[in-house]
Length: 434
Image (tube, rainbow, N blue to C red; front, side):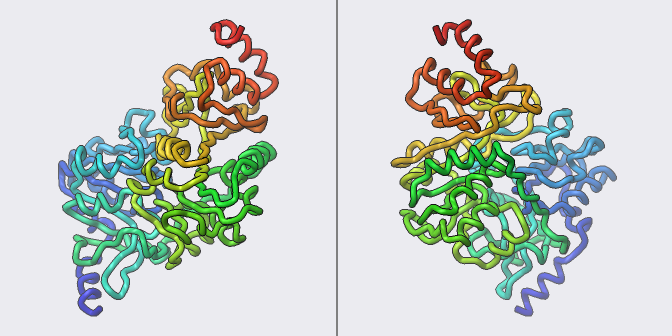
């Protein structure tokens, strides 16, 4: 213990001291959400701005915090790349001041190992334990691949980061430098559950059988689904993101993971984001397993769970069933993430179902989210060949195994009533409907 503490003190410095380990021409990576060490990354940005390093590449995943590297005055010598285009990076990417790396979330570890150079990995971790190990805490994600590939490991230690027994760990002997930043973790406000979200939640919950395994996304609709499942029994969790609604389901007894064929008795995710209550729930909790994304999001692993149910979102869906969840026209607002992995895994699961759910309208009810064709430039996230069920507050449109004509009829039936005649007219004009 004393030796580990000595190593810790020898490597302890300021964020600026940690950032000084980054050299010109290097490729720096951070992982997802709360695992991103904001103080180190901000110090790196300033280091480049002062001319102490140049031609530095910085890649992040699901950028949720305001960071200097994603501001309009990002220095020319820092090339920022988002692997998801979260809220923190959105304006920078669309302004051409940053780049985006597209891909399925589960494929990023392989991309890092085979196609991208990883010189430096920066990460926020829990305090060191008595054996000299730091836990990633809220993220397994792509961390293990970054740890293995990086030549330099830099840590931001935060006493508020929960200790996860299953997330990747880093030993003090592997660390080049570290700093401490004991700021409370970013939390998400509870989603507002309006009438539309609650109705959609009820529609989906009615399709969920006792013993099903769940993947729920983030936002009001997944939260509404969670609330509507409180009376179910023996549910399981195998999900990309661990959320507060899942804590609710575990605490009320609806989720016990007792019928899962693998990881029985355990809730599986690859990262967590939500409230402080949820972070406290994760801390040293053996029934929460945070595992690498290449495993958690593997459609073949998902499909091993009978009656698997996935719930995800989209911005718009066309008559073919093509779902756009990443852009408004050419304006990038998100990334592919794991949506396609869970759509595919769900439909391969015996008795499994995938639901892509959203309110029927946008922009205060002036725009239909069900459209004849996607907005020009829109990115297709889930293809027409993968899509299963589309849900709005007006019902569920079954698309899998349906013809174009049947899909169109089913989608129009769940569109907002004030747009149905318009959509039917467009379908007839294209000879889809007679």
